[in-house]
Image (cartoon, rainbow over all chains, first blue to last red; front, top):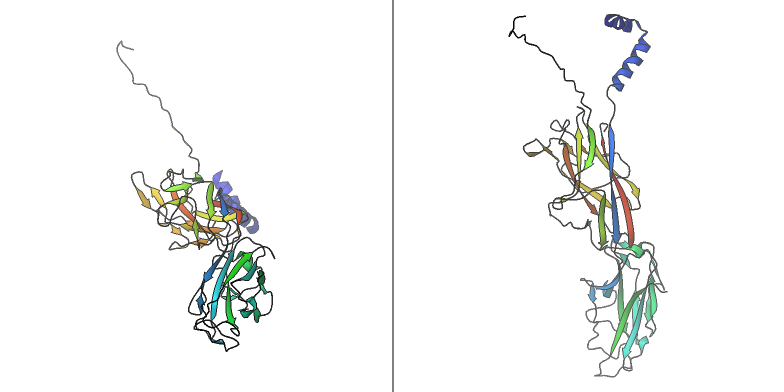
Length: 201
Length: 180
């Protein structure tokens, strides 16, 4: 019986033999597969923070000194600064993972009879510290020197990448200049500059 | 028949047994000290300022694992363990795995297999979407490994950079298969 089957097998047309052989070959080694699953759950803290930044080209943080100012000049810069030196006075890093728009504002709060318009600020397009490239937000006004206001003034509006910019955040740098004309000799003046990161325009 | 003459009598029983093929993957039961999780892996209250985060209860160099998977086979065919993300909202590339060289139990001792982990040497590797990424190929020492099986341990790491606050989820599917 077995010999007859074997003989008949070889008498088959070649194509049928190949198909039958392939069927036997593949059906004798079935593929096995089995699955298991793990469900990963992740909760992320929210971050909305502003902090000072300094390096060799960003000189100051919470104190910006204008020492021994010559009142005969119409414009002076903080200590160790000169015009177009490529440096900045203050850097602030804004970090957020809220995924929404935020705004950077500055405000001057002078002490005594210091006129706010004597102090001017210059802010250039900030940097995305995660990429090293310029941030994708928008300056409220083009980069230039502007006098301070007693009211909070928006200087930068976060772009899409700024809205979730961890871990390194967005760096905005400021330079300051002072018009000392008319200031009393021998007298000390001071003013607080407040940097506010807010979701309110 | 003479009284007292005894003729030996005998009967025979033929024992027949058919042995089923074994081919299964199952979680190693967490022991609390070396393997912590099975079907649920929490990453809670993650600080997004960090460059990486581990699951709850884990720390760098703690010699623990998140998940252990036993792969048991008796079918004399090379088998593969694959993983992939098959559901969830975690952005691609944020969840990574580390697979260490697996172990088999010989009956008297635990020894490392001669199979191949991928990548080799082990490294933190993003878990791809789907179910096709092979992370282990059985070797001669564990292609047939019933009844004890091969224990493959995995750790997971999250890259939280760029994730907005809130909750995320991912389903990781482990597939044991004879096809690579």
